[in-house]
Length: 432
Image (cartoon, rainbow, N blue to C red; front, side):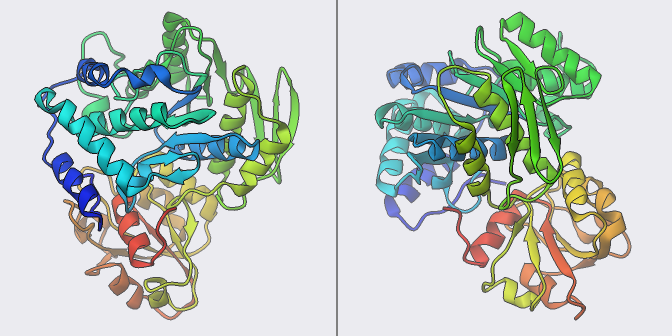
């Protein structure tokens, strides 16, 4: 499966084709290649505006969105880098609030690919270098950078002095990479995940985190201590109670903040609280409580419990509500189930073959009226047999919606961000 998008711009497509030809040499880990590539490009990562660096298993992209919207509400110009893209590669790079335009994207990718051709960089190393070039060359007040995979060896982990680093929720995902055997790393799976994510900690830079089970908490504390990073963990340095509002408090005082109306689910309120904590535990950017509240109200993030609009695809579902979520691991399944709260639904699911079907099916079991399994175009994915004897197969999402009973009950399309991108494209709801 390839993590690329096509483009109707020939110049961009030419560079995407070059990206598609890149491979990561088996067993190559470390940051040597990205450091060398950036050095050849003039070390743009050393010329960035103050940066917020966010890792985590789930919630890091949403936390980045809340950070961006809060700082934009303050009147700041914000660059942001998030991943993966859902429809267009351009979604990965946002400059002063706008997706990067095709002409600049093509030129940046060409420059990076030409400069590092003999280094045989990976897709993620080229993407990261292009992001840092754009962020260094185009003025802004601040930038927000989402970690890709893990943290310790992620290509973004060349930042030297972020304004703050953050870690969202921790869970088991990407086991082949994050739990691979390595001498000197923790044996407990969740502690190992914490070890990898906490690898973004930097000397003197605040590390702001959610709360975790003891085995993960102790590992985060250990890595922060070794790095010399001041640690601000939820439940120890800051607190947030989620009810009809977000009741946030830390040593600086108490805030009552709204729930995010465009990003439903308790987990999104928790991500918003983490963004608030990151802003309040650093001293390079000032954001008022009023701007934090406004940013929470304005924030939206596609394919995370997104209620789809009436469009070419959702018309196949009639008048019923259709929700879309790209979640595919156990923590995501629990977050979706917590939001659904046992309300009945029809599940349309497509899941990559390297993911566990029970991650979503088990948490949602009490709500499921039906399960319809669809392929994820362009990817190796689970067949209908993996989802139990009552599951049915459909050739695509439109066919799955057509086959639902006429009961008016809501639909959840879930299981893969790659499937989510295809759904948004088919429904003409392109992320902007």
